[in-house]
Amino acid sequence: MTIVLIGPPAAGKSRVGKRLAKRLGLPFVDTDAVVVSQHGPIPVIFAEYGEPHFRTLERQAVAEALSGPGVVSVGGGAVLHPDTQSDLADASVVLLTVNPEAIAARIANAKRPLVTDLESWKRLVAQRAELYASLADYTADTSSRPIDTIVEEIARWIEARSIQERQR
Image (cartoon, rainbow, N blue to C red; front, side, top):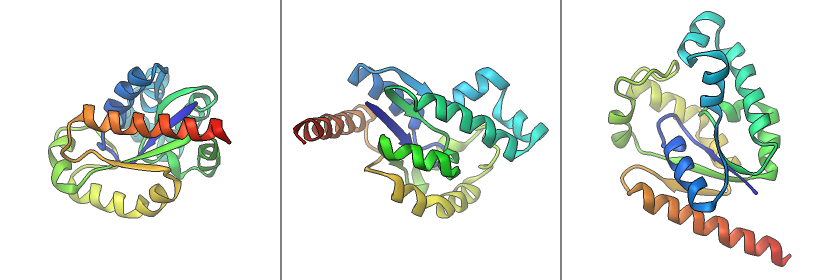
């Protein structure tokens, strides 16, 4: 079973992913963390080599993470790659959403190359919202609810989906 968390920057994919993996007894992979551990800080990769190079490294990390069972948190832009979009067809895809009011504190002092302020975050989300929605099997909002509530809600959906698939 592979569960993939997608969504905009600072939606909580890593935090929710870690707890969801623990709740379901599955391994957890954060593809941004994989890129950082293998190639260095993402802002440095962007600055020295550009976004296309980063996207290549990201795609490699995503492909590897999706090759086995587990909970996978992908960077906000990982879904832009057509091969990743195809790979997601075999996974349970959870879209984490968050409203702009909740995001301001989350992106303050963050080192995100494509999100420098609330306005840049809003533009990025507007550009990707339709794609995110088209790939998602389930959506959970992380704006203000406790993380444990969100994790439990997703886990119950995954468990129900798993039962339905076994009955087919």
